[in-house]
Image 1 (cartoon, helix red, strand yellow):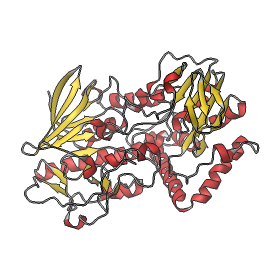
Image 2 (tube, rainbow, N blue to C red; image 1 turned 180 degrees about the vertical axis):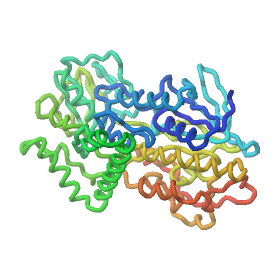
Image 3 (tube, one colour; image 1 turned 30 degrees about the horizontal axis):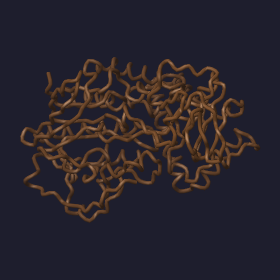
Image 4 (cartoon, rainbow, N blue to C red; image 1 turned 135 degrees about the horizontal axis):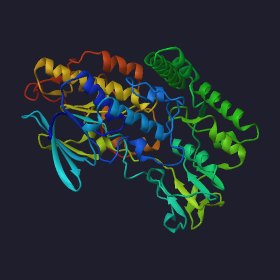
Length: 500
């Protein structure tokens, strides 16, 4: 069977959650999940480097319908993948997954009210059709990680690795390891490798804000002993989402106070003689980029032990034996790890057409951060950059089910976000605002724009609950039924697209 009511693309957290919500809220709808890789799990199957773990607590990174019951709230990759496998088996999702199916194109036919999705499987293109398409393919390229152009990188004679492409047989025992980067991946790798390696050096061009938290949530673990599992999970999830929101809002309203508090914690951990100003004091405000969470202060312990060194300096070149810094200092490396980030990828890199016309997504506006102007029956899941991904993934799945059920209620086969007359003068803004991370800024010109309500990607869980879960579906912008002849497209002038 290749014709379904719904096609879900991606079998990671977003896709698995979407399948559950679809089965729960739209019973009777047929669906399949197309997964490009040969295993489920997305990020949690792809990354295999030492220490791989979440940087969000699992009471909010976990699904709202399946409690996280492990003692550790900051969980390792294998534990998260185990949780996802339990989910697909518990709710009968596994048999709906088609592995090795990479979506390359999707075309909407208004006359048929149908998406034709072409996926490559074993070198052969296969067409799968559906009425509604849910893109849950993540936000970055799984095959092409980001590595800056380092002068002399071709001369390096040691072992060169990007964490996204980690070799299974790597032995780093008694090796000199240099990790380039200062994000979550680097700060996970460094203490994890320090136990076996001769030395580990983290080289960063500029610092990142770091916060240490226990890997276990004592309140959550106590509640599980006293209350039913679902009650304990719901209370913990509410507590943690409120704390996340409070923390983020405070960074927006009192950035200097938050900065002082964060740096004070680092000084307490590393002592008065450590140069916190140089190595842990960023030149931006907290949450202008994502904070790095380290469990139980493991990075600090590794630094204090002498096994880990942080170097804050620009790289001049990569040599045959390691790194040459702009200061003239050379760092020897048997293993060089480029923890330099991701390449963002919109909608899994697939090409979209509507009635044969190619969709240029930068010319569209995002509708509530999930749909796109003038594109029917398409919803994308993109989580939060300032909170746990799954909080928004669950909201997005719930909303998709509301739209599908509303179409059934009205007896129509199409729901299309369309710009209204009052929207024509709104100012186009980047899809993600107030976030200076390079991996975002490099590609924002390739993403849709946002504007005024409801054309917003708020990145705010409390606002989204009102806008996505509670607001009326029929708002004058989301049109149900064949609307092309009745509602002319409103044009909004979009500035010329340029790379950041």
